[in-house]
Image (cartoon, rainbow over all chains, first blue to last red):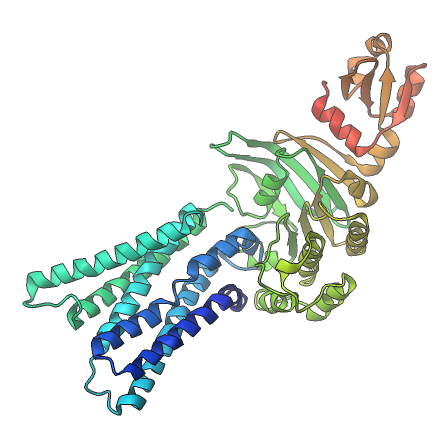
Length: 212
Length: 287
């Protein structure tokens, strides 16, 4: 498992560096004296930007036929999937960690951040990242990486659709639920986490039956 | 006789292409090298994929080091080294980083041996694989495959596209490997001259079927090709010819016992035969 995680990390390393650079640049927005809605958008983008590069890494593995080769090593198929999903979580964790820089810089520039409600940025960034990967990876595993970019865009669209669905459903039972509000954010995040778990199970099944 | 690999009645079909491995059986005794020969699309890679469990077979049994291998048999895979015809590893890795990956996967990983082999093959530890030539990439794959002390090496076109000097270096490593009587190699290759140098057995596959398995020495020293006129060809009993190919001025006939044939059919010239020519006669000829 450690070796697989390391291999995933090496495959993503260059993209992680680029994402880190962009995310850190975005942090500088906090010095511009912007309001909390812009900060929320920055935080969401900082988390999401780390999952953007996943397609390139999967394409690299496919090109080198690593996907076939790893099955000849002393690991089980489900361990391969396990390592992939752990790598996804690590990417999102990195994005979340970088967003803390934004908070720190905001604190330095404004002195007080207690009054800022930044939950929308975190719930939006995390739910979008989690559900995008949850939809994208099993589809790519099943059908191959040839249409990786298109599938990524479709997954992002579906993830936004899911948030919209959560907002619609909440509006059926509650009054004045805002699309960017915390209720929709936490609801979408919960749904994304459930989708991620279901995606893992589906990916294990797809991989078990897939021929390489 | 201990068998490192035993395949019995293997069938595997692909609905989309219509290709089928048909009742493939072969066995590799420990301490030997088996060359696996066939034209493109004959079924070599599908057989290797079946052995390695990367595809699901329709029927048959495959025993690696005495055991049937399922997804759960990770300990068995510690004992199997694999070199596939492609790059195998992510192009952005360096041999140094690859070793870290492998160390995290193989319990038997021997870093000292890996360093020794990469040194022997003159592979720079800090250069990315994408900057390597094909020869360097294959050498790296071989070094990685051998550095976890496998008992069985499975090589799919491991020497193709390499220059003669590099191939010679690699063949030497394989010969050293089978000096241990518990080791064995299955080596698919188009380069039959390599197999003539190191293989103990040769298996020929054509259109998904095994058409001949024999000891290499028998093929080279006992088998022969009779160059016949049409009158001479008509004299040859059907049972005495393995395959024949009619050419413009002569008919080539593959025979199993060159000397015996020469005594039985005086006046027919019988030449020594190469693996390439045997393959050609078996594949392109008639029975």
